[in-house]
Image (cartoon, rainbow, N blue to C red):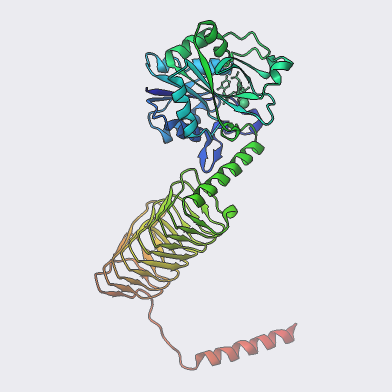
Length: 450
Ligand code: UD1
Ligand code: CA
C-alpha cells in the first residue's frame, strides 16, 4: 500500500515567542519538521505534503532541503486541524493510497509505531494513534468500545465522565486518502472552539458504517513542543535516547551526559568518545576511532584508527582516512587527510588534500581565501611540512618534499625538493650584550628624571 504523508505545521506557535515558525525550531541539529518527516519516511511515502501557514516560505525551504519532492501547501487562516488537512486535498487529488497525518511539532513518533498503524489499517478504515497519558490535561479523549474507537472528544467539549478517560489522542491518523478527504468534507465547526476538528472524523466514520481503531504508543513518542521550556525538555529527551542507543551499539562514552548528538550522528562499534564532545549534523565516526575531549565535529567522516583532539574542530567536508592523527587546536574543513597523516598541533587545514603519511608541523596554515575566492592546497605523500608554514593556495607540494619552518610557500614545490621561503638569518657578534647595556642605562636615566 502506498502512503502519502500530510504534516501539519501551520500553527503560529505563539508560546514559542519567536520569529521562527514553531516547526523550524531544532532538536539535535534538525528542525522538528524534519524529525516528523524522518519518522514518516519509514513508510516509504510516495508523496509528502506539508501544510504551512506562518513562515510558509521558510518551512517549505526546510522541507525541500530534506526531501526535494516534498510539497508545501498554504493554510492562510488556522481554522482547525480538519481545515488544515483539507488544504492538502488538491495535492493528493486522485492519490489511491493511504494518507497519514502527522504534526510538525511532534518529533519523536517511532518507526515501529507507524508500522503497527499500517498493519491496523489493513483491518480498519481509520486508525488513530493513542497513548495512556500520565496527566491527560487538555488532550482529546479517545472513547472506545472493545477494539473499536467510537469517537474522539476534545477536552473543551467533554463531559466530566469523558474527561476521566486517560486514553488520549496523539493527533496521528491514518486512512485511505480518498476516505479521509470525504470524511473531512463533512466536518463542521459547531463546538466550544469554533474550529474544524480533525478528531470529528471518527464519529462521522462510524455514522457511515466505517470502522476505526486505536494503536497505542508510549507517551514519550507523542511528546509535542509548544514552548521554549518544552523544546529544552524535548532536546534533553532526544540526547538521553541518543546516548543510550550509542552505548547499546557498542560505543564507549566516557561521560555520556557531556556528549551531544545530532539527529543523524553515526558512531561505529568500539569508537571511544571522551568528555565534552559535540556532534553537529552529518558526522560518521567509524569503529575504533577515538574522539578526545572538547572536540566539535560536523559534516565530517572519521575512519578506523583515527584520533581527533583534544580540542579539535572538524568542519564540513573533513575526511580523515585510517589512522590519521588530528591533535589539539587543529581545525580541518573541506579537506581529505589520507591514511596515516598527522596534523597534531595548532593548525588550520582548509580546502586541501594531504597525502598519506605526511606530517604537518605545528602552526601550519593553508591560506585558502584571497578575500574573494577560495583556493586549494595539494600536498603529496610522505611530505614534511615544517612548523609555521603558510601555504598560500593555490599551491602544490610534491611527494616526499619538505618545507622549512616559518616558510611562506606561494609557488609549487616539486617532488623531493626542500622549499625555504623566509629571509636568511644574520648573526651580529656580541650585539645583544651591547644592546642590553644601552637599554638598561636608558631605564636608569628615565627613573631619575621622574
Ligand atoms: C490536537 C487534537 C487533540 C490531541 C492533540 C495532541 C484536534 C481538534 N485536537 O489538539 O485531540 O489530543 O492535538 O497534541 O485535532 N494546525 C494547523 N492548522 C490549524 C490548526 C492546527 O496546521 O488550523 C497544526 C498545528 O500547527 C499543530 C497541530 O496542527 O502542529 C495541532 O494543532 P493544535 O492546535 O496544537 O491542536 P490541539 O488543540 O493541541
Ligand atoms: Ca497542541
